[in-house]
View (tube, rainbow, N blue to C red):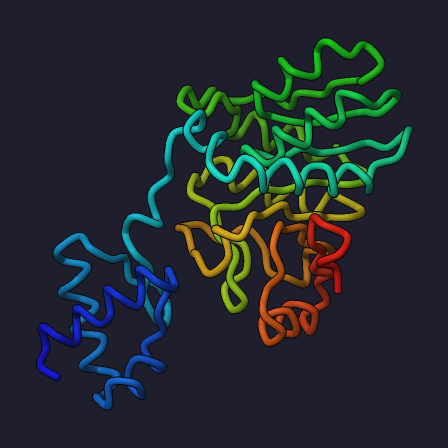
Length: 258
């Protein structure tokens, strides 16, 4: 296999699996790790991939898409995840809703509840929950990120220092067995990281497309997370890799639960 064929192989693997590892490619292609590193360097220079520690991801998977567009992607799956996630909330709880489109679907479910407190820096969620006057809303505030209608920055971080919640629901851009949870925007990520620490129970909402993807900013390791709610079962090996790290992996349909 010449260098061009090898790089085509790497791209194909990325298209199928979203991420590749240098060590695995070295074994599969029977070349040195240094050769693979050079291949990844050239592919990154062309703008096709993004190198990460120990491997690479497709450049297209490191770019955040428009919020409204993301709301329609895997919509059925997000609805199912939201319906499962709301079962963890009880009357009287204080709930944090993180940035993301799946947490927006969860907000629709919370709208049907009463006597809960919701902390969020996502303006679409705020606007949605305003119609329920039995829900107490807390908005930490901050700098407006127009394309996401979200708030972040030092003002937000300062205001959440003394906020602690019963249960926090968090979105992510990527979830990977080795690299944990990652997200795109540095400012939003800082708020998410702080609120994970301030949640008695931290639950991640991630549809199947997020698994195996890695974004720019690390949000959390799995020892900081209690539950991951997703739509479709992972294979047994992957399931064990998550549960061995102390994560309860829950599927949105009862008959799919382990």
